[in-house]
Length: 344
Image (tube, rainbow, N blue to C red):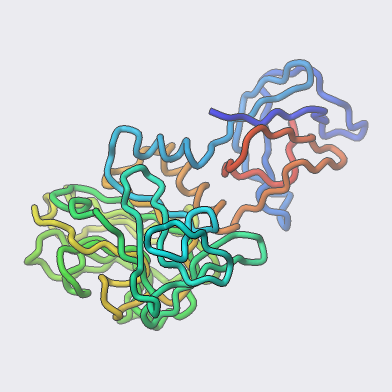
């Protein structure tokens, strides 16, 4: 695990004394510049030795190992110039403003995404916080995930997570969709909008003969993160938005495994490979695991989504009164760090 070393750590007192040695230190990492009086306490009972405090950080590659290291099924997408391409062979990197034809899948399972039709390709964008996303037009833009025929086949659980922004809640578009056949009524697993009441949540069915069922809540505004699941084995579902349970766990479908038929169609930004039920908005990242997350994994995934959407901003290296100076080794760390740290 990588770490951050905090040097010149100052005590929160009038004298602003340097802390050389201390035990049972509570470390506050500010994650909201507009609410510095209410920081999240992310590390406790730390020890400072010789004025240096080490705080663990997590990288994207470490999250991949945590989620998929035991050859577990699922997928991970983070959209940016380092993962997106203008060709389906994924050889020509995309720049901001380009239509995206191919995307690297990061879990190691090889479920790369493509769009062969030039008219259906989302656009790579960058927001004011420097975060990259794909812009889906709500009309026909979508990506088709290759090789995932068994992802939702005969499973008892699926966790579906994403960082996104909804442009039009009147659409029914899916951020992530998996099914054995085209169309809304064939949905096996999805995170999506429900056009009936313009709400957001999960939609799915367990058996191929079942009807599509939703568990939804009020559609979020602005950039948001969701970690939602369908627990097929225990007939439950839950929708979490921005690290908080929005609805559930609630009764959902009937208990058991999904049908033992292939999930022939897996897509991002639409319901299937057609040009209907397309997502209207921005997608920053997608994480899917075909099992329940541990408590720590849930924290790590939600922090990662916050990082990809810019809901937590980095300002590593700053130094102000009563604040530590950060020295970070490595890159791509997503543990929420913003501007300041104190020993209290």
